[in-house]
Length: 125
Image (tube, rainbow, N blue to C red; front, side, top):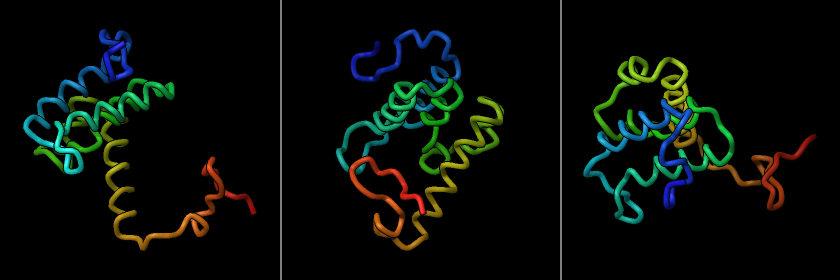
């Protein structure tokens, strides 16, 4: 396992993930995180690590590693589709659309979202 990444160093069987992490590293080079000031690439690597730990398939982990490329780098959806395939590109685009819609919507309280308790599962009616 990588030191703090949680994805095997060899990424055996995770070809898209390895390519996505390499691509994200190149495109996010020189960028830093707003909150901590560290290298921005740590965020996509952390997302990929969480998805890997959750047992997500290769294309989902790859999309997680790439999820900020369209808005934070010169990358465009067409390029991601050509390099990583339509499933990865669609997931990246979906995450961006969902994030944009959350930013436009008024903030709802946990109660309005149906979230109760520490397990944060929606309440059933």
